[in-house]
Length: 145
Length: 145
Image 1: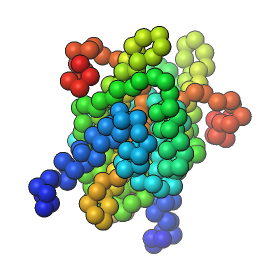
Image 2: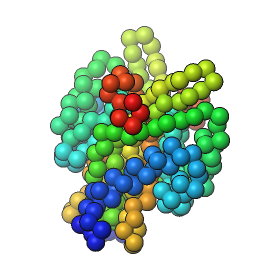
Image 3: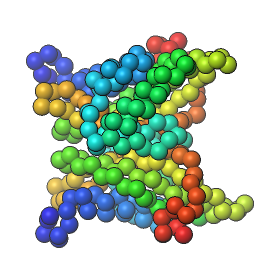
Image 4: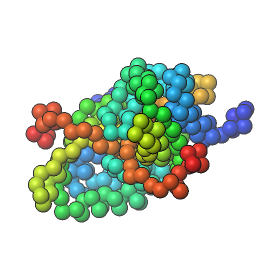
């Protein structure tokens, strides 16, 4: 545990949650706080090929955030693995989209890789999300219900 | 470079290629050589939720290998990132399936995480593959054409 009383696992979990809060916020500045602003950063949006480098990744979030659709996302079933200064989180994303035609829902499997900085912050290096079959609303995280 | 004259990046690339050779071989023993046989191992097959632990992952490959369909897979567009004893490879998978109804083809975006053992081998800890739109045959790797 560090001086703030958090274990590394709790810090990684926080970094992962912060990513989903950034998605919900729709503010690119929040996304900037989450990611490592590096060429080696990789982002795979559901059903898409990988984007390389934070510059391109950032543009993709700006496009998503500028969409008229209102999006709400939550992560659950987190599994955290830490090896030295690298950690990854496997989690299930539940996504609800308010579109012109009505409410749509989707689920995705995500793998998120983080690196610990010298200052003890965990920054996102890889986000890979892929579509999975959608389950019943009863199994959704509380934040969506 | 180590005593065999390979850089770490070349060793990671080899480990990644060995995984796809194991898929093509259809032999579970080959898959055993690629993976870290650990509870922390994670495998996401295209369109599916994550499997946790090598025991379950191994079972899934046995099911895939026991299928009557003949599968051929190749990886391309590899991007390798190494941070200490952890490395990951982003690559595009091109898959051809010989089924009763004829030949089918598909593509996937993969993120594969490896860890270096004490003996310098890189073992797979995470495989995450997700469907992407299929491109023309001209863009396929030579091994498939």
